[in-house]
Length: 285
Ligand SMILES: [Zn+2]
Ligand SMILES: [Zn+2]
Image: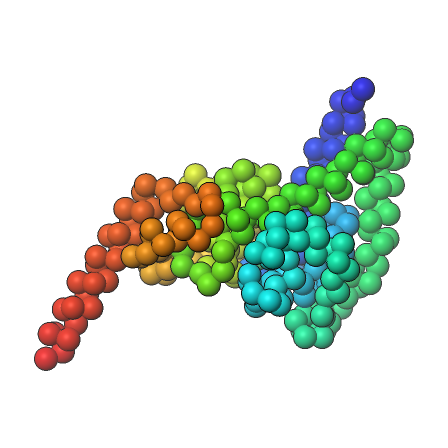
């Protein structure tokens, strides 16, 4: 039976490792969404390493390759090939990250290189801590089960969030916004938003798009521990909203639902653009 200690080891371990992936590996290291002092960077990169998703630099190289080729042939994990391939098949196929091609600048960052090169030390620490606190059952829940959940939720961003959910912004890939994965993956499920604005430290673009990673970044920014946080101006958001082809978009993949307010806003933007395009030549004359 699971004890309170086991449950806490699972919940706290899951949350810290998930935040290490989302804030550390993804928004900070890969997309340069904010700057932070070395001890903050080290904390999130170590937490991310404990999630056993590969060394930080290889993770970043794989993810940059995904953004550069989303849902095309060179995408490491597109569910367009098959849902299973997008989820875990790409790892079983022994995909190898191309660091020199996609993440060479990170090799100049001594802290990142150190934490990346000592990856297995952090994985071992992530297993030792729950063992020391909760014995073998602590290791089971705070180690094995925690890693299992961290893996599948991150992989679901690649598989589920390129297959099921709504699209608010125009992108060249099949990225989707998915509420459930948004919750479980600390905000990473707002994946259409992310593909439209990869550098944004916020993935949730509406108050109801729950994004715990963005809230934590906001708090750390307020207390002066993060700066140069990248956020997208409302005008830029409006420009990228889906315009005319709503029906066509719905046919791309199953499960596409556009929220009423977004659809209304998109139509309003489309009308405004048509009006400005038709009136612009006249004003020039
Ligand atoms: Zn993606
Ligand atoms: Zn990304």
